[in-house]
Image (tube, rainbow, N blue to C red; front, side):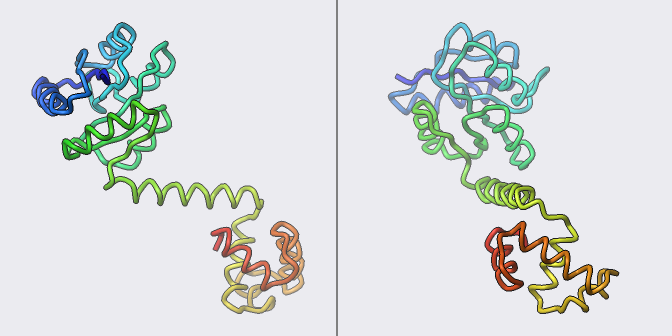
Length: 211
């Protein structure tokens, strides 16, 4: 049996979750709490396989509770179950160590499947949140690539204009630089990107998602 601790400050939500999970057959609700302090206390005592944790509660938030749980002795999987789908909350929860982030609109069968998966060590996310997380991940990846290549915003602007077919002179006029300065800067950009010429540099910048 998969043991589950329910944490929510609304008794009606707790009762509804109990009824849903009772239909699973292999999931047992072994405890409940109504705030972060209670969640941590019950988690230490019961050591459940999975904790379903509300995001907005009296006192500490679900994110803060997750951090405290991760710092404690419990090894329970933590799934944030909330009505809030803001990407900032999702990011904060995952950074705090949550194993999943589900909306309360999640269908019962998906909730049950998520609990089973979390108990096996797999992270879960509501499908409607996935696109936003992937977009943010892509942005972070591009930012990391930018840092790795050590290209300045001016370098990226030069690359962008180069990709549009502008000459060194045209780029210089647009950016308030001399043609010679742009040529020298491009040589530096080639080195940073490992490129041999303008076309190669543009292709590499596009491949890395820089422009």
